[in-house]
Length: 75
Ligand SMILES: [Zn+2]
Image (cartoon, rainbow, N blue to C red; front, side):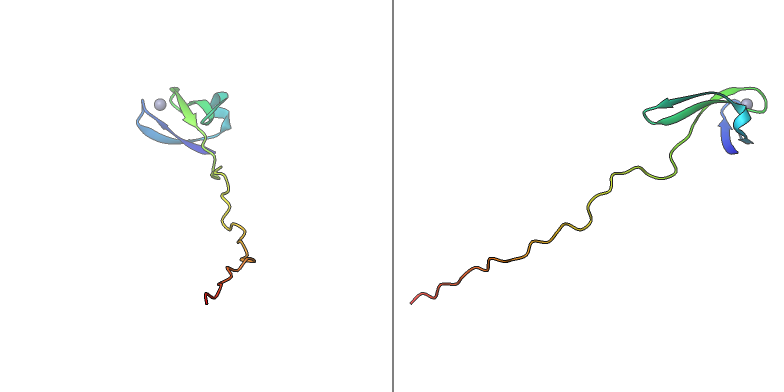
């Protein structure tokens, strides 16, 4: 079950998958043509629940300072 907003009825409906007429995948996610209980057809976007952001490396490997700067004692 999912909820749709019919712009013609200006109402939200809770509909099931039976109300889906067609279904297609777009770059922005799956889009379904859903029929509201009254009979209007509308597009419904299924947005991914989980964000698909790339996992950024939170902890970069620290560089160990092996090479300590040698302080040449002048004089
Ligand atoms: Zn409607």
